[in-house]
Length: 90
Image (cartoon, rainbow, N blue to C red; front, side):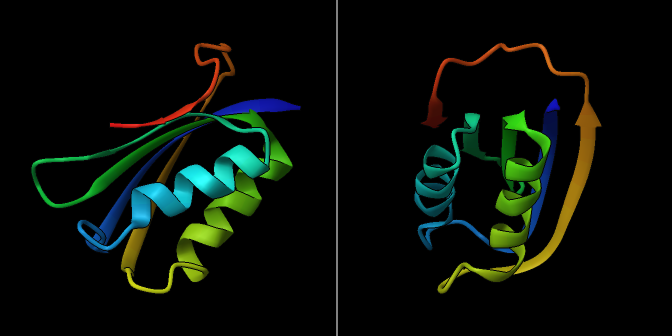
Protein backbone atom coordinates (compact mmCIF):
# COMPACT_ATOMS: atom_id res chain seq x y z
CA UNK A 1 0.00 0.00 0.00
CA UNK A 2 1.32 3.45 -0.90
CA UNK A 3 1.81 5.96 1.88
CA UNK A 4 3.34 9.34 2.60
CA UNK A 5 5.42 10.12 5.67
CA UNK A 6 6.73 13.41 6.98
CA UNK A 7 9.92 13.03 9.03
CA UNK A 8 11.76 15.52 11.23
CA UNK A 9 15.24 14.25 12.04
CA UNK A 10 17.17 15.79 14.93
CA UNK A 11 20.70 15.39 16.24
CA UNK A 12 23.96 16.15 14.46
CA UNK A 13 22.31 15.82 11.05
CA UNK A 14 23.43 18.81 8.96
CA UNK A 15 26.77 19.04 7.17
CA UNK A 16 27.38 15.29 7.44
CA UNK A 17 25.93 13.97 4.16
CA UNK A 18 22.59 12.89 5.61
CA UNK A 19 20.44 14.37 2.86
CA UNK A 20 22.56 12.81 0.11
CA UNK A 21 22.56 9.42 1.85
CA UNK A 22 18.77 9.61 2.24
CA UNK A 23 18.47 10.60 -1.43
CA UNK A 24 20.53 7.58 -2.52
CA UNK A 25 18.58 5.15 -0.34
CA UNK A 26 15.18 6.59 -1.27
CA UNK A 27 16.01 6.46 -4.97
CA UNK A 28 17.16 2.84 -4.68
CA UNK A 29 13.84 1.98 -2.98
CA UNK A 30 11.68 3.79 -5.55
CA UNK A 31 10.61 6.45 -3.04
CA UNK A 32 9.81 10.00 -4.15
CA UNK A 33 9.83 13.21 -2.12
CA UNK A 34 12.58 15.40 -0.71
CA UNK A 35 15.11 16.05 2.06
CA UNK A 36 15.74 19.59 3.29
CA UNK A 37 17.82 21.24 6.01
CA UNK A 38 15.72 23.33 8.38
CA UNK A 39 16.81 26.49 10.17
CA UNK A 40 16.66 24.84 13.59
CA UNK A 41 19.40 22.35 12.64
CA UNK A 42 17.07 19.45 11.89
CA UNK A 43 16.35 17.79 8.55
CA UNK A 44 12.89 17.39 7.07
CA UNK A 45 12.14 14.42 4.83
CA UNK A 46 8.89 13.84 2.97
CA UNK A 47 8.73 10.39 1.41
CA UNK A 48 6.06 8.81 -0.77
CA UNK A 49 5.93 5.22 -1.90
CA UNK A 50 5.34 1.67 -0.80
CA UNK A 51 4.84 1.51 2.97
CA UNK A 52 7.43 -1.25 3.45
CA UNK A 53 10.00 0.70 1.42
CA UNK A 54 9.37 3.79 3.53
CA UNK A 55 9.82 1.74 6.71
CA UNK A 56 13.14 0.49 5.32
CA UNK A 57 14.18 4.10 4.63
CA UNK A 58 13.27 5.11 8.20
CA UNK A 59 15.29 2.20 9.59
CA UNK A 60 18.24 3.30 7.43
CA UNK A 61 17.95 6.86 8.74
CA UNK A 62 17.92 5.62 12.34
CA UNK A 63 20.79 3.14 12.00
CA UNK A 64 22.70 3.38 8.72
CA UNK A 65 24.16 6.86 8.59
CA UNK A 66 27.86 6.72 9.29
CA UNK A 67 28.70 10.37 9.98
CA UNK A 68 25.39 11.61 11.38
CA UNK A 69 24.19 11.30 14.96
CA UNK A 70 20.44 10.82 14.80
CA UNK A 71 18.85 11.54 18.17
CA UNK A 72 15.21 11.36 17.10
CA UNK A 73 13.06 10.72 14.04
CA UNK A 74 9.59 12.17 14.41
CA UNK A 75 7.17 10.40 12.05
CA UNK A 76 3.84 11.71 10.79
CA UNK A 77 2.09 9.29 8.42
CA UNK A 78 -0.23 10.85 5.86
CA UNK A 79 -2.53 9.76 3.07
CA UNK A 80 -0.69 9.08 -0.20
CA UNK A 81 -1.24 11.83 -2.76
CA UNK A 82 1.42 11.13 -5.38
CA UNK A 83 2.76 14.69 -5.30
CA UNK A 84 6.37 13.92 -6.26
CA UNK A 85 7.88 12.47 -9.44
CA UNK A 86 11.37 11.90 -8.01
CA UNK A 87 13.41 12.44 -4.85
CA UNK A 88 15.17 15.77 -4.42
CA UNK A 89 17.56 17.49 -2.06
CA UNK A 90 16.85 21.08 -1.05
